Length: 466
Image 1 (tube, helix red, strand yellow):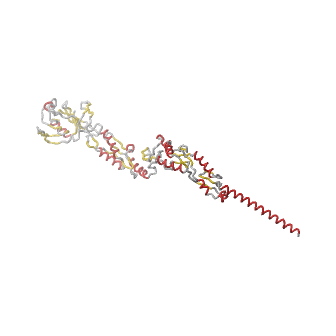
Image 2 (cartoon, one colour):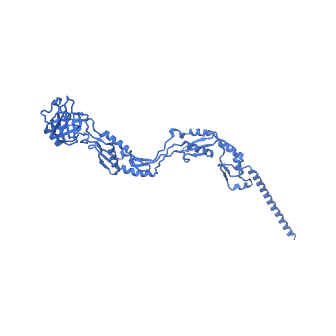
Image 3 (cartoon, one colour):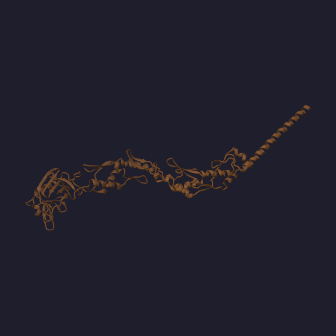
């Protein structure tokens, strides 16, 4: 019995000890909790951060002090194209922190009675620190950036077509480094106001970009249409000379419309034709001429030669290219000579020497007629005009009339106005007959020689008078 009582007493004593320990533990917890409540009433939770700054256990005043220090060392880094960077510092823009109670407001969001829950998770806050800075100083700092110096500015280039050794190709756009200063100002101000430390000017849309990119569908369409044109070769025939219009010539003629269509710039084609005129037109020009005696002389004047018609020739070249078929064409002419060779008098022509009062007619290089003649009366001012002309037409049994004459002829071959070669009933040809007893300007020819010329000549044959 005594033994049972002893065991019961020991149990009660152990129970009291456990209870005392529990009470002591609870008391400690209560004290710790109370201390925590007291501490976190004025300090930020564990794991608290503001704009990435660790604020654990800091009072709002301590946070403000640290923010103020960080703002004094604030720097906005500007990322530019070409892996370049520049920065704007707080000192450049006179930036200062203004304590406006925002930190205290954030602290109030933390319930000190629930401080023990903060250890289970972190608490991140984002706020825009209230600062003051000199806006004009910001603009001045932007103006002073290297990226706005002329030597560092590269204009953007649109993607475009070019003719290369491989044909018509799309040349990709070049982004350049040209910045829109107003957009930069706006982006920098927003970044400073938000407390950002880095601003990517490209991502912020501050650059002036090309308006056409290599992915543009109209360029692909232009490439296809352009290659069709460039694959055409048009040969322009000038008898013993040719001009070839191929991709090397027409590459600068192609223009691309807004819809991607490719066309030929008619003005540029016309410029090309104008250059052909400079090279190949002979109408009315001085000429080197080898006489029947073998002497080379210069003959000036007259209305013989070739004269390219610019508008019609331009249209003809454009039409040939657009046909898609390589071909040989001749220019369109306002005036045509008899021979298109470099020597456009050729080997069929009439040669008349005023001084010798003599005429030769060559056909295909063979002398057909050689005869004395009588040209315009010198002393009356009716001299036959010198120069190179062409037989206008030929007529049988014509009557030549003037103010004081009416002369029937059997063979009439005019080459300039009312001046031409014709037969006449004269007893004397050649010599000095033309001085006082010459014609009104025509070339008087013995009947049989005039007939022979008439039977072998055709309109357009050159007549060289010297």
